[in-house]
Length: 68
Image (cartoon, rainbow, N blue to C red; front, side):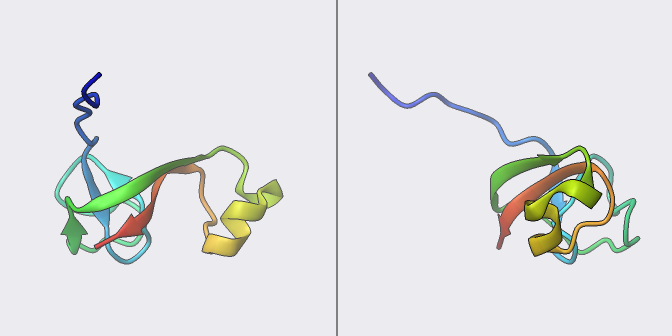
């Protein structure tokens, strides 16, 4: 069976790894975005998330694990 063709959702900020829909990051304000990323992470409660603490994420949202 061939692999499923999945389209990535949006661009990702190279600075904070947040998945953004527009042309700039809503968290840090930069326009340094990439379409080359992998790993999808949704943070709901950053204060109680060990993953969010390791990635230095302070706000809930969608993030990429690796950005190129």
